[in-house]
Length: 529
Image (cartoon, rainbow, N blue to C red; front, side, top):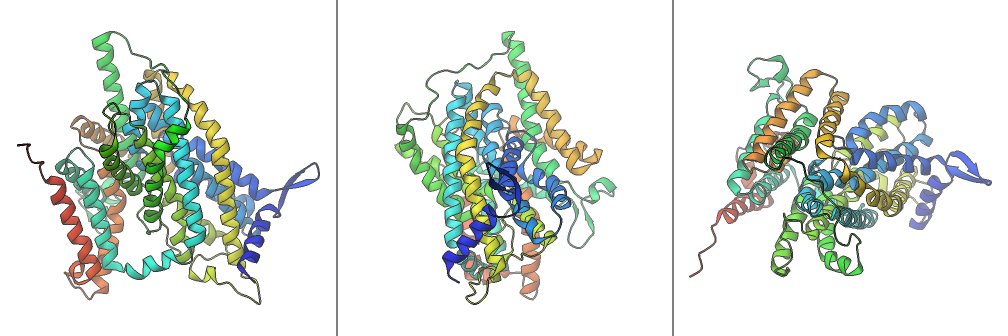
């Protein structure tokens, strides 16, 4: 069988699969309906501060499996729903970041830096339009790269990144984040250090509680949802409540933002934003192809590179990055959205999840059976059909259906969300707090997690008060376990060599770059003579 034959079989598996119902005699596939349902759920979850796509996927997966069973016919409907959630949550996550300065996910934090200042200037609807166009563009580009490069790119990456190299790459990532985010390299390093300290509290790989002070509550460590949502969302809510109290105390009333200026996205705007979108799409796709790195780093890199370009080319009247620059929204949203497709490159080619959402795709495939992600998936057999390859092209089809929904329903949704800015913040912020704590309890089902979340919220509040970015903390907390696991495995694989980071040429280059990034960032600009 040829490649085109497999593509056609994959398309048929989606459109001619198990029928849900018929309209005017035309059968409607259950897979298409599940993609639509997942996309709508993803948008609502992504737009709700305190929730995220992986949370919705974790809750819905057991429900889907119990509804569809374990037959091979259940694979594409279940995976299609999860892909719809992943796509919808990516675009929906920009809504609370732009309107309320409350990132629902770590990668949406960078969107707040320019999205919320545009909202304060009365340009909320335009900021949402920019976020939607950039997100959909980056997502579509990433999916095209996935289809073209999945059999090749991940295998090449894996061939050059063994355990020492992966460990050094994690260290380079943390060094880069600490150096470029956080107000100053020193504050970035403090934030990163706090994140690593928090993630290493509790049980390590040797099952011995670390830094737990003999308490049962700390022996299992902090739930990742409590740390991330606490620092990002609860901390932002506490800071927002303080600002409202100060505003009420000084002026006697709370200002309500009104729309001002042209809210439409013109062709000229798109031309100006396109270089930032294109560069971030490339960055996000490249990062997404690396196992375990994720969209948070992609958003940070895309924003940083966009900031450098904008600083060189901007007019004097244009706002800087961090002050409401539309280019900042475009760079961030294109980068974090372009990760979603590329993240499936290591999933399908190697069976390695690239982010939290990909974990649930693999878990669904393993639970239902009939599909084992890995290099064998892409064997183009001639004499007989490779059913796993048909499923792969069926997944590609569902991703393009989700992209079509993104460009259409996603655009309508983003344009309609501008009305939410009229909700008074003194009413909205307590609602956000309640939703975030509810999401934590639904996921963890114990009151200790609520206490941890509030404690991390206090930490996030003080970090914002001291102008320390919480983003390095979050990235360090997310990557900390992976860094430790990779370092332990590399140490064992090299026969207990304590210098394993410096014996591999690639790892040595990564370590030198880590030091170089910190040194370069700490250099003080020379005074003009």
